[in-house]
Amino acid sequence: MTIIVPIKQVPESSKVKMDPATGTVIRTGIETVVNPLDLYAVETALRLKEQYGARVTALTMGPPQAQRVLKEAEAMGCDDAVLVSDRAFGGADTWATSYTLTQAIRKIGSFDLIITGERATDGDTAQVGPGIAAHLDLPVSTYVSKIRTVKEGRIFLERLMEEGYEQVSMPLPCLITVVKEIGVPRLPTLKGKIRSHELNIPTFNAENMELQKEFLGLNGSPTRVVKIDTPSITRGGKILNALDEESLQSSLDVLMLLLEERGVI
Image (spheres, rainbow, N blue to C red):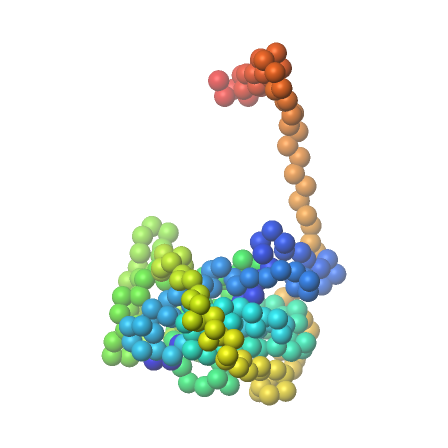
């Protein structure tokens, strides 16, 4: 079994910044991590590797420093990694991103299963995984919470639904997106970290991939963010400083009056 796991480098949640001119995430000079939800996809692939002897390849698209997330995936246990990096890919929306990753997957070669995280924490669209499946004309199952078995060229799954679970099966090759219930991601091992530093990560770019250049990057993106607003939060609250017994009592009186006015007590 051959498994490909697309992962993403994202800014730490507290440090996400947007470019108001382009509507894209500012990635330069920002501390980044592996998209937390992609770690569940890596864990799922590694469990299948342990059970069925699969070979796992991690794949990411981003600037050269995105090698960092690939090294982490290799330290967790992935066998190979591929970086898709070129200035021509910058500013891509979910459609252009899924197209570029699809062409990278075609360049990697044959596979049995593609596993992605539910969504990325920076864009929060959950579109790239199903987009890859659409470009490759693959069956797709989203919100997978459990893999029951793989046998006779089919994968048997459970999907998380609004009111329970759905049991489905699909022929291989296919694509699935997984949720947190699939299992707790393992930590990278010291042996894995040493191995990851020894492995060479190939880079796919606009010159060594078969691409239609009109589908790349910001210019090839059919969707655009046209305006960004930062919501202002005005609570109209009042700060009460209780520094001694007298101020504590007066603060309590003010608080009780406020609760009475709002019908809480």
